[in-house]
Amino acid sequence: MTRLLHKDRIAASISLVFSLLIAQKIVAFGRGIIFARLLGTEQYGIFTLGFFFVLITVSIAGLGITAAFGRYAPRYEGMGALRWFIRKAYALNISLALVLGVIVFLFPSAFSRLLYGEPGQAIVLMFAALAIPGMVVVRNLVTTFAGLKLFRASSILEFSQVAIFALLGGLLVVVYRSASVGLLAYGISMILCIPLFAPLLAGYLRTQEPVYKEADEVGFYKRLLRFTMWFTITPILGQVFNYVDRLSLQRLMTSSDQGIYSAAINLSATISAVGLAVNSVIYPHLSTAWEGGKREGALKNLDLSIRVTAVGLLAIGLVLVLLAKPIIVLLLGQDYVAGAQVLPWIVVFHILTISLWLFGVFPTLVERTYVSAIGIVCALPVNVLLNLLLIPRWGIVGAAVATVVSYLVMWFITVRICAAYGMPVKRRTVIVSFLPFALLLPKLLAVAGVGLVLYICAAKTWIVTRDERQRVYRELAVFIKRNRAKSEE
Image (tube, rainbow, N blue to C red):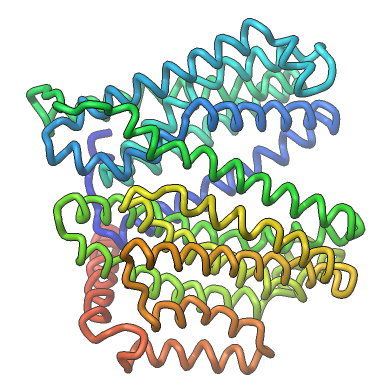
């Protein structure tokens, strides 16, 4: 277990996080199939709604506090009061989770009426209540490990919980065929992980700070919640955005078109996993540099990360676009082949979203966490209007265009606010962020365009400078060398 506390270089960390994210998705997908087949439509619907209730409740109970570990762990580590900070943050977060869990457990019939429209699912809500505190603790552990750049521990913990849930849930569902045991398995998977990883974190903290030191800080919780509350509000706004978008699709498209559109989104979700891996790894590194007074260097590294990620995803996106039809037919069947026409737009949407995530790191560094919420509020009416105008004309392609344009609005607003708060937004970074739109060209032109971009990156200094290129090469060389050494062992 102590090997999980090793800190890898950036390329190795991104590779590890991405690999285990994909593994989690595969395991979760398999678990979903087992649950759907064994529970039947009624019980599976009950389980899905109960599972969604747990996620929403945890988001409310968490108050976004888990987002603070990546941002503030370096600050308190530098003060020698990291254990004090984690203890204070955990105490507030877990206390809120316990209060909500107890309320749901004591009044399950009332929550059953609220969620299902009748009180008969009280046992489902009781098991959901038991899962709430455990999930909060696991989320705290995951984000704390990630904030300390211990990505092996954070990724293994997440994968372990998903794997235990899939295995235990599958076994219980085989025997009992009930939605309630699915939620029971979810709660148990949390409880089994906590005794393994909580002592690991505690031991690491003791080695870093043998003497417990309290920070002399007034108004700690007020400042903490002012930073974290937007990590609760913004996801809720994001869910509202997605709900309104899906509601528009439901009213304006057939069920068949909705299925094809959703399949195309799920198929290209691998790109989002890459962006999530990059974002989760660079965020604590940039926070450490920012708190260490190396703010100019942090901004340069963020700018480089945006450009390199955009170019890398451009190449991955090209492969998905070129092989869209055979991939869709192979994985989903001939009925979904119409999704190939919308896939380029969906790929552009995912890459644009990742660029938005990376630019969104800057507001967290300067503690202006409300910026993303402003972008969503402005983009929502644009999305509704474009859905009304474009879906009747172009069908699923119109839906994809509406989503991409609304995210462009969100992107421009976010970047403009970042620039107003002091982020140096370079022209070439803006241009590189828009390169994925080349994937909308005819295939031969798209191949030529992406090839030209890769050549410019390798031979010219228009996208990356010579020094930046050498830094990327060195990072990749070390990563490849270490992987080769491990394979030989």
